[in-house]
Image (cartoon, rainbow, N blue to C red; front, side):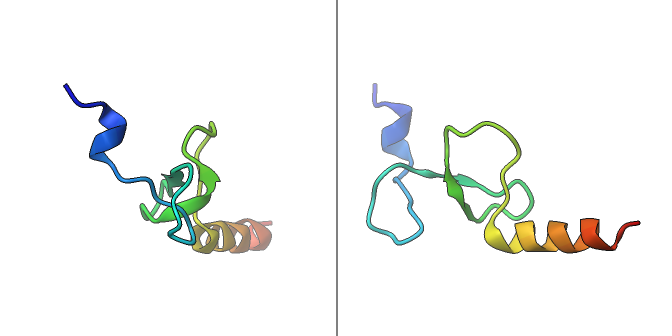
Length: 58
């Protein structure tokens, strides 16, 4: 039986391999964080949008 890691290719931001990056919880794009990092991770674009929302809420 193949390992689960073999079913999914390893993705990195620059496409050169290495540890897989976690998917954004909003849009599903790769983040800048490793897949084993805990928490709700966001891609750079969604992080920027979230920062804009929180900056304007008073």
